[in-house]
Image 1 (cartoon, rainbow, N blue to C red):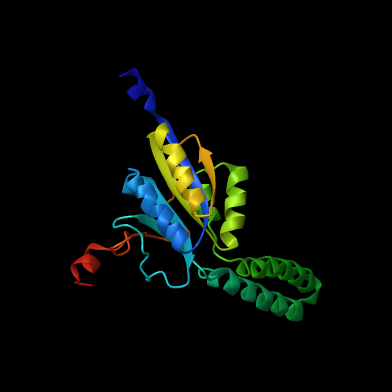
Image 2 (cartoon, rainbow, N blue to C red):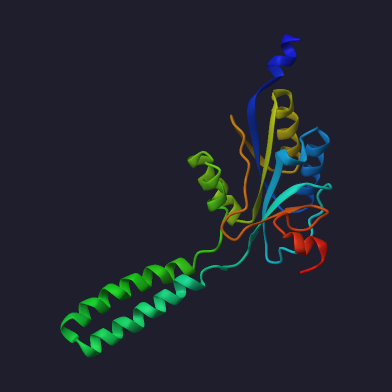
Length: 209
């Protein structure tokens, strides 16, 4: 009886960094078969077309990060506006316009630099307060094409088989001593395998939209 109580302790999360492909699909299937509940397993991956279904077991939770630079139209527009206003002031009132133009050009350069940055997994990691050092490594690997897998459990006995499933898929793993539950933020979308986007409206589900 005491042993059972010890098994059901604090939350743990095994974080897998895996290549995209059949190995990932196999690891997800094995982890689900071990008894990790569907709400305790989340896969975070990058896709050009987020509408394409993933071949995970029914109900598996996964987050799609867009493989583009969407959402950056606003900073790009501000950058162009700063340049136009700066040139206007430089022509109409040179005494204060030229210094103003230099300031506006500096702001425009910063905003242009932002538009060159792809939408990444970093906002998701920051939102769930992942350990900073590990999160930096996960983000780097994600940008190189890896997929992140988060499997949470209260049962210590599951840690070894979960990490072994990740290793069989050719991935590396990290163990965090608390529950990490990724959420879809900053252009990312949450899905369930075998279904539609989780954040769809009632009208969309009923076909009335």
